[in-house]
Image (cartoon, rainbow, N blue to C red):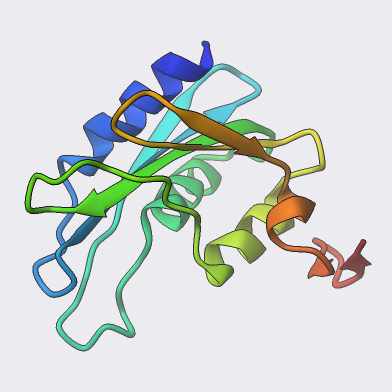
Length: 138
C-alpha cells in the first residue's frame, strides 16, 4: 500500500461524513501492520460533545476488531461546499489517541485536493504526550 492509495481511501471515507453543523467533512484511512485499512469519517451531533472525529472512528474500528499495530494514517478534510481541500491536521484528542497506539515510526499523512501531502510523526504533532502506560513521551 503506497501513500497515494491510502490518501484515496481517506477521500472515499470523507464522502460518508455527517457534518451538517460545521460544514467541515473529514475522512481518515488507517493502515495496520497486517495490511488492512480501517476508514473513518467525522460524525457530528447537534450538541457537539458526542461528535467523533474521523481519525478516532478509524482507530476505534480497528481496535474493536483486535488490531493494535499500526503503520500510517492518511487524513483529508475541508468544507463540504465543494471547495478545494487544504491540509487538515488531527485535533488534540485525536493526536493523543495516535500517541496511545502508535510508536515514533508511525506516519501521519496530511493531504490536500491537489495530491500534495506532508508526513509527520506522532511527537511532531503532539510533543510531551501521554504514552500507553501513562508516561510522558518526549
